[in-house]
Length: 406
Ligand SMILES: Cc1ncc(COP(=O)(O)O)c(C=O)c1O
Image 1 (cartoon, protein in one colour):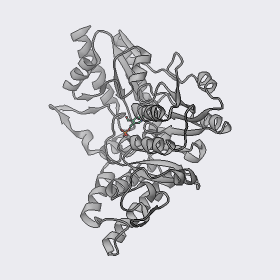
Image 2 (image 1 turned 90 degrees about the horizontal axis):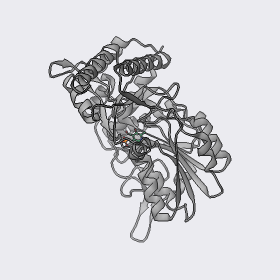
Image 3 (image 1 turned 45 degrees about the vertical axis):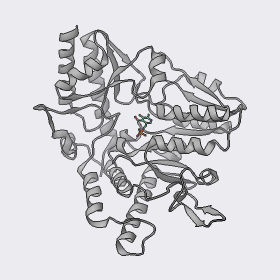
Image 4 (image 1 turned 180 degrees about the vertical axis):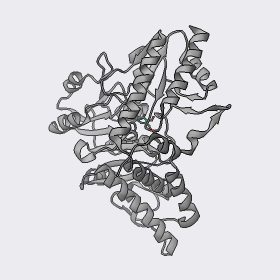
């Protein structure tokens, strides 16, 4: 039975009780990476202590056990995501690698004059690979803008579709604005027009379960480190037939059927795109993160994290001279702001002296910064394990900033 008790949840994350220069850590940089529960740390530790062996190739006991653990991890994650039967989950390093894998595959399919639709709120990971592909193959990219409150301008987005449109790639949740895009509607619209879709789920999975059958996109990508799992592991989910038609992305061991001097043949997904020894402990840790998340009451957790972000926003604004970027109703608990008298880097540095960790800079979203006409913002990003004491510390530290600069 899923539960939500903030104190016992915080006890699951050992790092949250750390002190920074004698002050309690207030970790509000969850958009960059998340902290890990003991269950995930233990799963990785247990793998190396008890099961470590290379997978798929061994006949011995440990290798069989490690192979089973790795493949079972894939199944746990697929089930949790409600991955359609027609789709496969490929372990990769993270969202960035997953998108690069897709653009590499599509580079053999898209031809001069074909068009791609992106949005101006994309992370560089969902921007640069398309840009490189467009340059290589002579494609046109449309970048769709925002409404006043930082939502995607859906009318503009729809207006970009024409008979040369081949792909629409968009984030589920903006890492800067917190905007939650209406991905189900967007995928349906693209599908009706025969356009492939890629949804960047890097910022959505941290805030509760996602149903990939309901979303219906061709591709869905995410990173383990943002969802309470290890670094260097993530996934590309996509249709088997499409992925099997992609030429290999990396080649070597494990992804082949037969190698000879004359000819080499390749396996089907997922092995086709998992060349070499994969991140076995990472996959096991990631599956444990999914198991952990399944024990959480996400209705309560989402209400909790939203309440924290709302209070942080209100109390920030009460300081004066604050601009908030992203005011979409029901947005994710990400608060990007500018305090006019101080550069975001000064804000971040002063907050750090109070043990408050936030992110400052362009958040790997320079096109969005240009669109918003700012060089950088400060961003406090909350998740379910944050608490009111951390919001208090954040606001207290912002008052210190105001004292220096106000
Ligand atoms: C929306 C979004 N997409 C993609 C990424 C890239 O993730 P990674 O660096 O784990 O590949 C991030 C990371 O911040 C992100 O926020």
